[in-house]
Length: 226
Image (tube, rainbow, N blue to C red):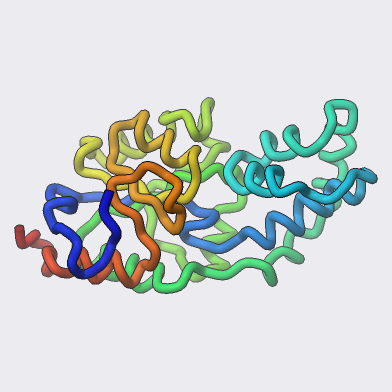
């Protein structure tokens, strides 16, 4: 395990050609948006507020899995009625772009790295990327709606690898949850943890400014300097 900083061992970056990002908790801070959204669903159904464990769960898993986790089976259809009537635009005030991530993405792109997304979100990524001024950086953008088996299953990672013609050892996946760690491990890519020291990761990132500084030590232009 290494902590991303300008003094990090650059050998940990050797051979890297592609960086894949999770969305929630990595590209954006959406925790308060999720608390507001899923808490509203429970409130409309007359259920008690979200517990700490429920908050953790809804922040990691797909929309459907999250609702199944917080709502009794007999209220599941009613929950979807609440979802259909919910004004998603009300959540934008609770979302922020992670500090330094756009600058990191600009440098990665300009240096020649491939960039992709693997997220548990289903059909909201175009909206999120536009809202957060992150359009145009990523290809492909792999969502749970495009998969038979979302994270922690590695299907999304494998699809990205095939699409970009990359080998697992050429790729790093930046995530913030156990489902991200499992997806990274199962696909064989390098897993880098963002602001979650409890995860087992090759590199731990506390700030995108730090990992950018570390990578700038060994990359210049399109040519790696190992």
